[in-house]
Length: 629
Image 1: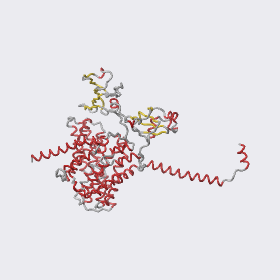
Image 2 (image 1 turned 30 degrees about the vertical axis):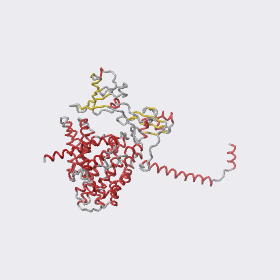
Image 3 (image 1 turned 120 degrees about the vertical axis):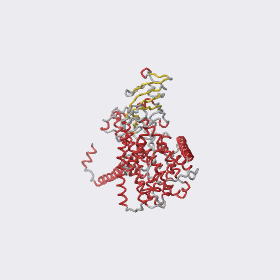
Image 4 (image 1 turned 90 degrees about the vertical axis):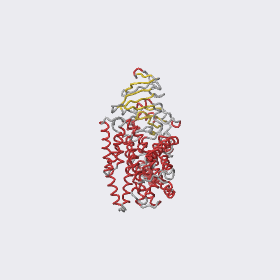
């Protein structure tokens, strides 16, 4: 027995170490990290090194706990401004998008696989949710700076669509396992009522649990080493409590993280670091277990239909669902196209595909194997094309800041303050003499191994280590002051225009100088307000507005979303790659209006010509008067 413990521990830790080392390969070559984890599990499983693991209950239990940890960390790291910015599109994708994807994919699965209609929709529900962890890893590994609106939409969608897909999957498994064949109206009614109850209870428990976590952390004077474990345990308690009363534990734990992460919780720096590590560990364990559970020797029997279904999901079901859900929102076509392509299927889809095996369904193994192949196809095709597609669609913007050397230190006994250690980078604003704001309190400077008070140092120099006492919700201004200048790619040399424009200047000056055709109301605005209005009330870093012969580019915005820097270009950039589909509601309306105008113009012209033909010739007196004039 003791020897078995050592062997199991040795094998388990060796797999985790191998997965950790594989991340270096993924960062080096931009490979999908999830794909490497799954391959390690497959290589060591039944058809590889021969490790036998076929316990569906343990796999589902471990995967569910790991997913709860990942969702709490995801909610904890989602800022409220991202939620406000992307709530409409993301929640539409997470609800109606999941349902529409399930329906479209289920119809295709019914004709390609030997499954009933309910089993086909069950498979569709299992693969309807996206895995954003792999997407954002690729964006970070490829040093891709994605537009904020697109990134926020994908983040919020990924955190909210898993609970809905899980509810659909479990409900369909229960119906099929009970050998029920309900009528369509009964099934729809049952799903709607069950969904509202499940999500409602999960939301209530999640919000209350998040508030309770914040209150307990602030009230209890726990040791900093124990505090992260305490918070993680409370998050799993929220997950279990919501599930025990019939709610969605996954939605509850995500909302608990969202509430806790956007409050003034104590020791936020320590919690973020610990949760980042636990999230990595949870992903590795979940992916390895799911890879071990699979049996690749069973794949060839269904390889062709499974690959076809994977392609159908990527090129038909997901794009249609995204387009329909985003029609009400006036998003540019390149953004809609990118969101539709970045629908990677991952560990959640494989985890949900285990539920038919738990329910004892006759075709449970077929559903699991099909879902596993679909995930592999998605990662191989979509995983390696995220970066190139983002560049092709013009969604990449230059880095806002250059290299930054910063260490965040938590202060014992201080709930809302931190000690930041910055190393002054060459070429940074403070190295060039920029002042540090009053709300920041520099206390110590290290230079050439000597420590001195900030007041006695004079001007800071490159290489100095500066310790600054600040509130924990400090603005981004400090990072901008201590970061070096961003290295601009040659292709982006003219990205921000020929020269700067003060956003506070009157827009009437632009009209007088360049005659871009502004209305009288627009000329009364400031340039910054004009750009914000043209962008629909919300401006982002690197947004562009074309005004006749000039183009205004947003160089920077403050913490409240107000434009603080603008660039002007006399040669507007070439339009990004046109996407032939994905018209928004606004574009559809514009095209309909243009068609009506173009249709009415020929009619009016023909009417004028007809009137000219039938009109009597002018009287002689009129002709004479006209000639004399």
